[in-house]
Length: 152
Image 1 (cartoon, rainbow, N blue to C red):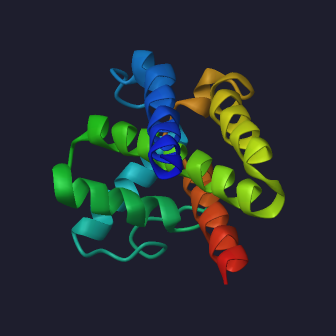
Image 2: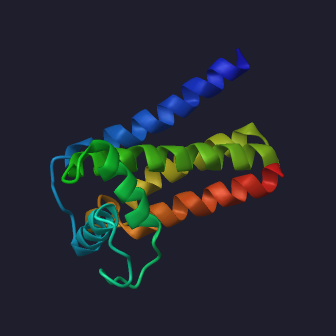
């Protein structure tokens, strides 16, 4: 039963993230940061080289992840990019839950995951919250790296 309850909580985190982001899913491009990484992702799919054929000062996590999404769903599927972001943020909340649970118990883990899910929508402005910009990918992969570290 404990595993099933954990599965339901993880599912709740993803559904809650999706529900909070759903009203903004229709917007094609939220800001220039998102447009730049989408352009780099499309160039990666065209076998161009980032930082030679398209220049950005940020890390390459976002364009490579977005290139994978475009490769699976079509080169102009922005809605798929925004939906993948729902799962990315939801999985980040799940990782935070697992990290905190491992370090300090399940109650803290649940609180960490819930606060992260909520604060991802209310702390920054909508222009920073909704786009699929570099920060979301950096947060996810950093959290994943720390999770791997504490599991080792």
